[in-house]
Length: 393
Ligand SMILES: Cc1cc2nc3c(=O)[nH]c(=O)nc-3n(C[C@H](O)[C@H](O)[C@H](O)COP(=O)(O)O)c2cc1C
Image 1 (cartoon, protein in one colour):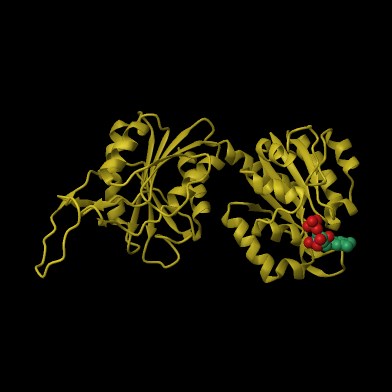
Image 2: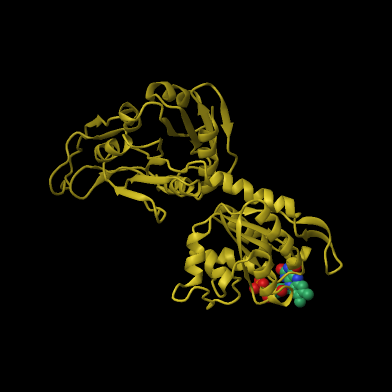
């Protein structure tokens, strides 16, 4: 496995040499990138000698002529570790600033990110740093919390670089997760559907497709191939996912049916309309002073239909949006739709469910087990959910 170790300008940079050796002992091919400030503490020569690999120090370094190193390293990295991460580098990573080689290659990479901060306790406790840490966690970066104690500047508090073994463990954990869906294709339905009333109007719902896109990104972080059949939602699917765009529930079923036959796991996160207008008028229904009646007919149950064509043994996970925390209706859906599990999001919470970036899931399994994700970013919820499904007996 290829690991890029980013070292930024903290006194704790001297410990990155031991960290690099320990990671090599754990089986990683380690390549190091230093910031300018890191070079005040440690040298390129030290890391090249230790790792036997080129060490990058400037945004324009190009160890292999004609191949831009920031792209080359970003693509080939299985994991990126920034240790120590200074307040400056951490805040830049959260903001997407790419003004040196390290921040540029992190921004260019889809690889999982582990960050081990080291800094003065006031820098660590500052609101700016706290917000950046929240932002990085929401993007599923793993933060190895610094320790309490005496820091180099003589102060006391949280800011000392975590132990080398804790950092190596965090890297091992994230790389183990990256293998959990290796070679697997996961089909995800996502977003709302639109059921036309006439050529310009439709019935739809508040689903944004954010959970489905987060699931697709999570599949990729776990080493799988994500196929997303998505209704007209606002959420951008992740680069690298196979995307099929549809409008209506019937379109969604048709598109997903063929894909379901090849899927190794199916997750139905779409908010499929239960009903559609029996007739869709051609052109525009004109205003009049008379009431009009709208007759709705039921749509097929997309996830239940996908279960009928899936390969034997494929786990099928549904989603339920429930306006309160009552789980009985969701339990009945497990049986009715033939699901392995159902994830219930409580849409009565303002910070969970439709169109927000966080969610809180209750996961009910067909065998009666239950689990709760706690309130997290949708990406963290997605990773939690997929790990629960994959790790289940
Ligand atoms: C002796 C010394 C030690 C420093 N230690 C730290 C540190 O542990 N953590 C930190 O966030 N900044 C520390 N700094 C400040 C950073 O080096 C400075 O913010 C720098 O701009 C960081 O650049 P970089 O993030 O590109 O490496 C230290 C500065 C000096 C002079």
